[in-house]
Image (tube, rainbow over all chains, first blue to last red; front, side, top):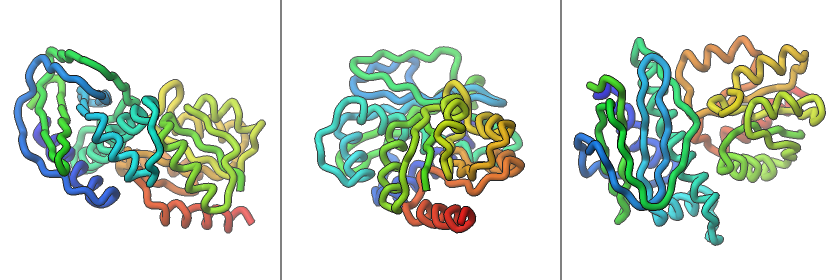
Length: 154
Length: 121
């Protein structure tokens, strides 16, 4: 099931960035997630609920969020932290919403999403009892990591 | 038209307000969840509500059911990143004016505004 969901994320990530932001994300790595992840930056977390439980984490740099903000609003004005966090929350919400839409339309199972939560700073993230995969994307010279995990896993 | 936005995302508030105003309409109230929309709909009396689905406190479909129970027949456009067939079908009995999937294009939003304005005239 994780494999099918992962494929939906790959399609959603590529099409949303290409169609709406004119960006070409390149999937540079796919790997099993480490049990503990240390990260400094902005983390956007969305919970998966419904017939299967899980979570999706976007690891985002400030530079990447600033670039998205400029593309979405067409503004160059200085950003405050809350505006950056709002972009981080919505990018996960949109990609996850689109991926879950694809999944639900193709599957007999039905999944839902929880509203996003944002964390920032130096973080150490551990999610035991979950099987998780990381997708590492490169857009220009910026990297984004997406970790998709489901209880019970593959 | 006077438009109410119901969404938990400050990014969507800003983006939608900008587009609604560009189309010549007024954003009369921004609710951050379904409960705020239900509590304010009679007081604000909007001509149209944009309603997100996944929100904390009270989600969008439940909020529209409550608004309909209050005999308020304001047009509602659902605006959600989650747009699978079952979700869209579950909104149809609520007499909605449209369903926009996030991310949405400005032209699609403008077309919906025109359609609702035409139906309200």
